Image 1 (cartoon, rainbow, N blue to C red):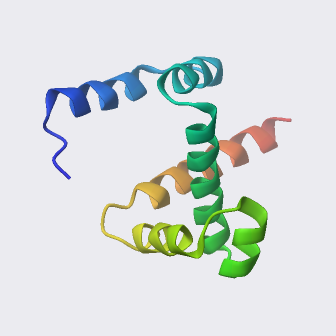
Image 2 (image 1 turned 30 degrees about the vertical axis):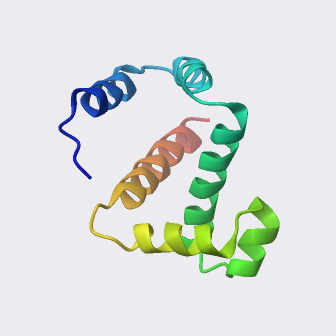
Length: 102
């Protein structure tokens, strides 16, 4: 994918500018429909479940995603971009930090 277009740069910069969960929620709701948000949330959940070796059929039941979409998520999860791996690593670190503080 070519990330060098002005529109894509602006989108990435907008995401990077978000500072709180509430800001992120408001931005995502303004940017996408509720259906799109649910779809992306389910893809993230599928990726998380795939890292736990959950079967496609169980992921389908839990998320409602098609086997084709789950396969695509699996491909990206193991791909060279590393986006899912980066976010899961950071979420794990973030959650561990807050679990220790509570």
